[in-house]
Length: 253
Image 1 (cartoon, one colour):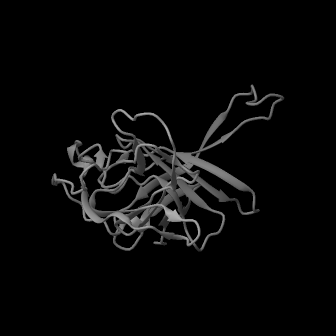
Image 2 (tube, rainbow, N blue to C red):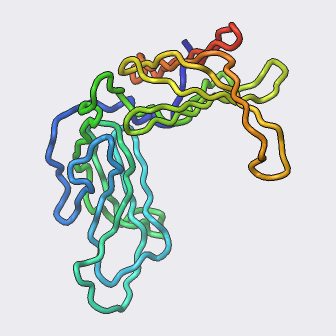
Image 3 (cartoon, rainbow, N blue to C red):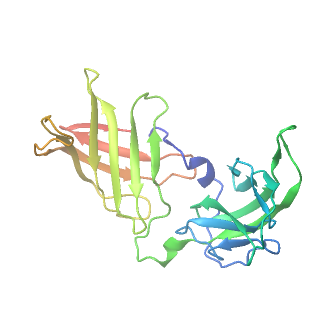
């Protein structure tokens, strides 16, 4: 089984799955939206900012190493303006996170002259993302495997996976024929277990070109084989498996 590399693999490897509800430990004035985040939420951090200041033009920067998230706030300059009822706030998008334990550090704006931060608002505040998938009927899927997957030894070939909140899955495989012609295939497998799907039809579509975009000519769907996904070992050795049968010949990543 070849190794698949995903855009999300670097973060998923270090997550310890949990279903406990743990109080978050942000400093006064800083809040999460939602307050107790789950793996189904698009998590945001809401911070108070000084009334009468505005961004100078650079937005915040966010990066993540393993389960440690760091935000560097954008630079601001003071302005003269009227009162600020309710107080302005800065909304920072942390995105969707796999279930597990994290720490969050927020640094003040980078100093343009030095390229360094001017201190920290807070450092290494722990927080928990609960596992929303435990609330589903089995077989619930362990993780959201959406992303771009590829085999490092097979340049120019790979697999796009889209997976929604109720685990409907659509996959598009891009590869080459024996003569080097690029081909695209799609399949929509249902999940059999928490880590693998049933085998389903592998579809190739075609359409005669026309004078307009999109062309008025009908699209033809051709079943050229079967396909399935298997992530049984993913998170242990960054491995997943994509198995297909095209015209009786087995291929996979």
